[in-house]
Amino acid sequence: MSMTIPLGTVTGLQANYATVFVFILVGFVFAGIALGAAKLLRPSNPSPAKATTYECGEMPIGSSWVRFNVRFYLVALFFIIFDVEVIFLYPWAVVFKHLFPVPGMGPIVFWEMIIFLAILTLGLAYVWVKGDLAWVKKLAQHPASTTPAVAPAEEEVPAS
Image 1 (tube, rainbow, N blue to C red):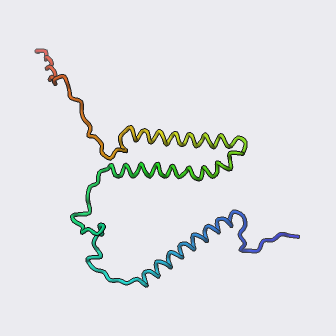
Image 2: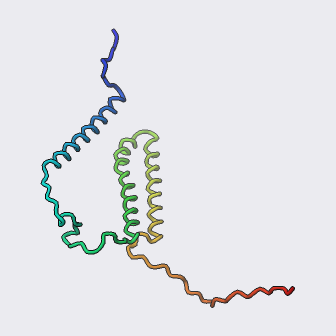
């Protein structure tokens, strides 16, 4: 008795990729249909008032090209870094519950997470000590010199 697979049948690993591909394809098709239907059904009444920037009900004054303090970007970057890293704790906790009873795996997985959290803590301590988490940062103050500045003595040039 021969086991023949009909043409067009997907098996094994290819079936998993085919499922993902179908989901991605359906997602793109659904998004395209939704955007196309919205374009066809929405009213189009352009006006100068609709083209202006909306600022929480306030009239926009001045240029939108305003300089922001780099501190806003740094705090946002630090938040994103530590927030994304903490998100790794949730899947780890789920997997750890199942790996802890496995001989030899529980302690390894536990100490790997302890090392990961220690690295995060060191990074947070570094940023904190540097003062980058403070909204109001003191300006750098140069220590006052107690000795008066003395001009260097002129070198004697030998007479020729």
